[in-house]
Length: 443
Image: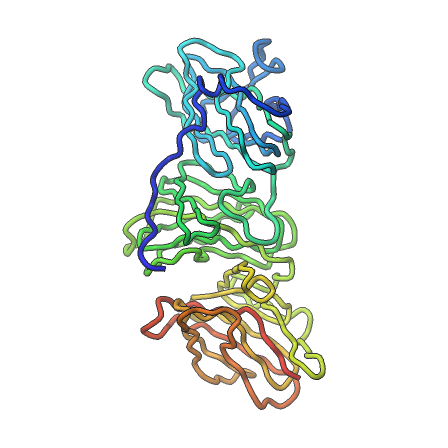
């Protein structure tokens, strides 16, 4: 990737202003969702207002900074209905990760007012999040934001929200929830052609996922900063996303070996950076959730012993062992890459010196399969604990599913093969990444 991705600081305007939205006729079946529906989740302090002028007789309101209301729904359009009056303020509205700014102020009180509306969405699941920044224009006397109801076109609310599952989840997937100010960036280098970035302290991106691990992929460059990362609400080690030279779709954080089930990952902008960086930007491009078989990969620094015993090849041919096989023990920070071009659709990669992957197998030969490209580095390889040689994985142009190293002439029986990252590379390489995609074992 040459050059630095340009930051497009163009905030998309509100899809429809208050007056324009009110005059837009809706088509298709409309489902009214009241403010207390189970498809809406609230955070922060919200107050209830009982009045016959409200839809269903009740509304919710708040002026608490950072308070949120999020609705997950299926359909092709949605309209937010609330009160606009002389005490109403500005709201930040995220639709599938795209930020819009909505001023709910009017000089007179209007109940059941259309505050935001969008149509023509792709059929399927979406998420609309309303956040209160506690700001207002010069005319209003307050910063209150009201939630009365939502009208959904050709669909309905989804109680419980959306959870990401195995595979790649783009940054605009409705499984993500954003707070603060995130800017969209469109560039073909990004996964799916787009990403978002933020620099304001406290801005957050959260994803619920079902699996045993997750990888956060980001654009990383000389202007990137440090992020706080929370897993299931627990603060992890700070993540420094600075990288020089810059790299798109770069793993910024990964965790595997989690108990199978539903988890949450939250990325928070700290507003800090290391002394080499020229900024504190944090990017969100995509997330990879591996299959449940990837439980042997860990970022805890503790080797995971094989749970299924050594892999035994079938007679007469090689046996392919994918990188998430239980016969492989990982030590250090390994990141998951969910590109379908990988063997089995996923691979792992590491850059920290001393990170290891050890496979136990029965046979007379083993091939290490992985990606080799212009960002690949040098690894040490060991057989049965004995150092063999340094292996340079650099290759241009890059190619996947390459035989990076092959043993030969081993005595038939049980052996171990270890790959250790050195954090070094030849002068032609722009990085020192080491990939593990699969192993082929010969009987």
